[in-house]
Image (cartoon, rainbow, N blue to C red; front, side, top):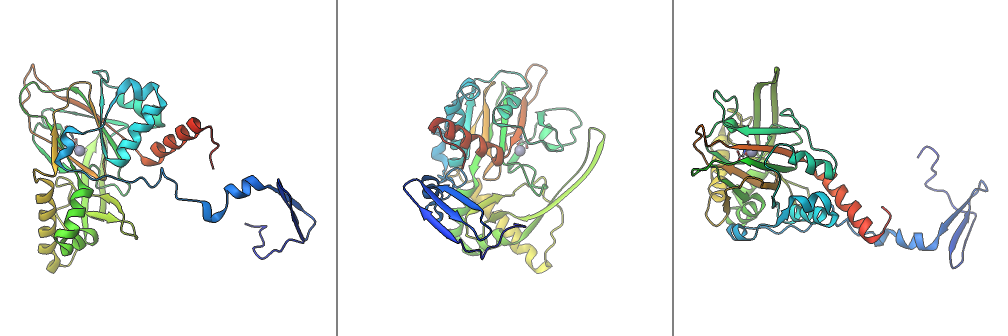
Length: 335
Ligand code: OGA
Ligand code: ZN
């Protein structure tokens, strides 16, 4: 840019079958292969398909149609790795089967893509019932449908929940709901509620001491975030991390709670949510900013405990891996 003159005019431009040759006023000569110019024509450049996937929204019918992948295939086969990420883009939910029944599987998947997204919970987090829990997740109580880390300005994109140990008794099931489907329904059912959820900010916070470090995290965002052209960007929804205050005029408080209640009611409709009891070695993977997840309460005994290892991956690295695999399969160079 320092040297660019946007108004420069070539002295001479000549083209033959193969090459465009330009002589500039300072006698500098540039040569461009015609094939390259054709490939790079401005009007020809369509949107990057990996960056703009076509999403398919789902309701309860997903219960029997969840895309499934094998852990070994994802680790050893590029096509499976690619197809798993693509399923996450399209459906926002996929199951990975037959992972080892011990910690570390999430790291292996993260390494296969690039790196896991580290948060102040660590590079992965362990969810198991423990006495005097500092966090609702570490108890055995129900967790309502939510997205994780709403108190971050950049919450993690993809979430993995690896079931290492599952309770034998009833309970400990995971619920999932396509938040974009529910929001799309709301857009038609009640446009005013849709407007409130997409514009009125909600405060999220998390104050805790973890591994000897004291945190007070805060972030404010509407429940549903849209791009300027109306496409979905993200959902931020978490009862347990919503702040006890709302930074909005008092006259709007009732309105916003009514709108959130309506959103919550839609999420929990039978037609919208699915439930899975993960078996040991299964990994639920989902778009943390689209598909809300929850968990039923469970009973822990000396012989029946529950252990989930969780971790996150961002779309930036996941999409990069998809592009690289596509380029390799098609023997293309990156543009
Ligand atoms: C969480 C969570 C799921 C589970 O810790 O945020 O959603 O299955 N846990 O325990
Ligand atoms: Zn969660």
